[in-house]
Amino acid sequence: MTRVEIYGGEEKDLSLGVNWYLNKYLGVKFNGSYVWVGDHCDSFYDKNFFLFQARVQYIF
Image (tube, rainbow, N blue to C red; front, side, top):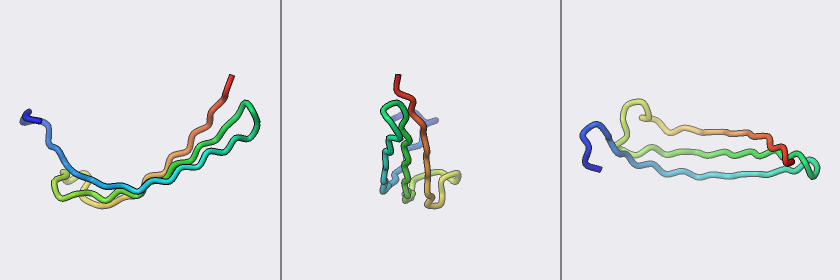
């Protein structure tokens, strides 16, 4: 990218996801990621972090 306002960075992550279907209409999804932040990220992302997500899916 060549725009001055956009600063690129580098990160690496390790993710694990689990899908659990309670019945044929309802599912629950869990995702977890550990993120290693690179040297070129700004000060907002200056430390490694863990991210957890949970979703509910209704199938109709």
